[in-house]
Length: 253
Figure 1 (cartoon, one colour):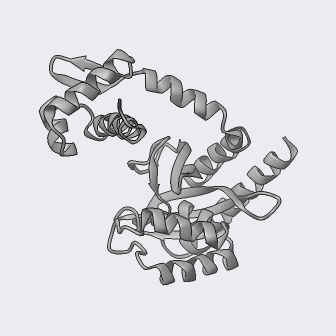
Figure 2: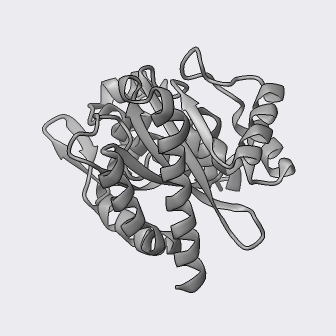
């Protein structure tokens, strides 16, 4: 009889296989096994489980994520209460700044982008709805952490660490807490090429009645378009105004 821990581990491996397929944008058994460091027989077993449940599809010898995940994603998205209050303001922010506007929430100690609006002239980035990122690497994530109880922030750091993404990423706990103090004082956060080289972001927290962050709104733009007053005044004012509108929409919806 299988132990409960063995069953849990097997289930976790199935999810690891699905995540690897997403990361690799489709792969065969051999490539997946090498990527995950698992025997090909194990990978094949979990692929067949996912196929049987109709979560993946196969083209010849390559497997890829199936459309059933889309159904789950749309279901979850429709249940995020913040979205209804945020989406009109997010579209306006993207139009007014000419950049990419995003909405992030925290889940399991990660930042999750739940909405994204892109203006016609905005730069291409790897941000997409559903993308999960370490909170300390982004302006939106730091804005959320700044208005989260310190005990919870410490739990997140203990669980996920402070991995670096670029040379500018804050990877020291003391420095991060100093930065969060500064964010609380001024009300918004910067990401100065901390998540992606050549990209800057500015974010403001969306807070509830207890002054705790329930999300954050951000604008991302290339380094060449974020200099001087635009970076230090115009874009911060825009995200602060948008966050305020969303907070009011939440309160009176």
